[in-house]
Image 1 (cartoon, rainbow, N blue to C red):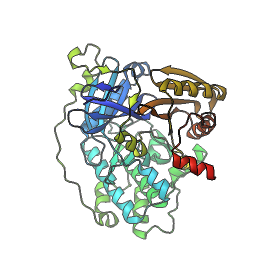
Image 2: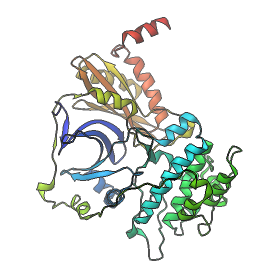
Image 3: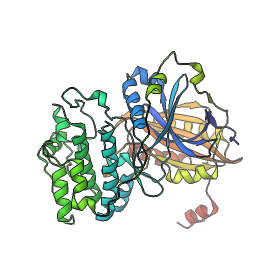
Image 4: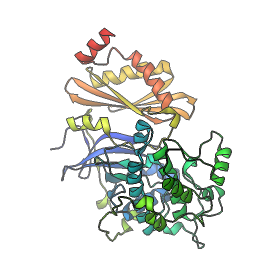
Length: 442
């Protein structure tokens, strides 16, 4: 039975927001026919058209349809309404591989090898389908509940159509520390060899706990990358040092290839190639979801009730380990969260009004819509204006969970804002008896 106050899209019931970017947000959802949990990436059609992003979004959807592999986040289907596009994705609960490195400092060699084997398998499969990821980094590597690695975020991937007659790609993209030297040089590059370089950087990070190439000055960073100027730490075994040196070869022509990596002694230890079935894929419907003359019968309708979204026990559990598709990588920050939440016994409207009042003196403008609040910082910070999305969920008739999530700007600034805000809101925050007695003692 559908919960009252939820938004429905086709057979899916939407829940809380898991992540938010400039062009899309990702929501937790439930398939009402099967009871399966999924993540739905929602794009705003107008925004995509305004920013001339149609090509990139089509590419991301086409890629996700083409790639069916146990180590790649699965896309189940794609739907469209008159104003939005919905990508229905596998819901991954284990978080980012990067969080694991941040928590543990570095991984043991056998564990790093297991993830590297899964990564190479998935990348090899993508290449066999003519897909080059071009933005491989630990934040785009998620872990499922069994600790299996899943590649996500194909927003920068390249398809065979983008390869020129000389067999090369020409778009400079990716994250500087992970990018191959030939991509930066802008003279055309082989997408497969560039992805292999990024895999080498990832292997180094998994085992060292830090990046092989790092410099606060971008030009100095590129110089190090061009020369492959890096040193392996003393705890690396001789065989892994040799393999990393072969992968991080600044000359793409002599860089090790995936078939050679798979034959490497260090790589082969305990290696079990995955078994899975490949299916024929048709991409005709990808164009259809962008077509203005689209047959109205194929469009889904978003239905919404004007009431705070109820939060059930599963939602509460998933808030503590939910999927985060944000692609932020700020090493110096450690594990500063991009979202935070508190509980309150006040009515939903009152909670939002109190947040609005408390945010004004901190230099934030508020825009209210249903049981959501958008806060926009007036001053520009380290990464532009800070923007915060706030939403109220009903847990019980007289108990609400309030979530505040950074949608734009710097995570550290969001953290400072929340500290100041929570000081002003401490009267409306509900504490359990245990928490109250703890704060009384301190």
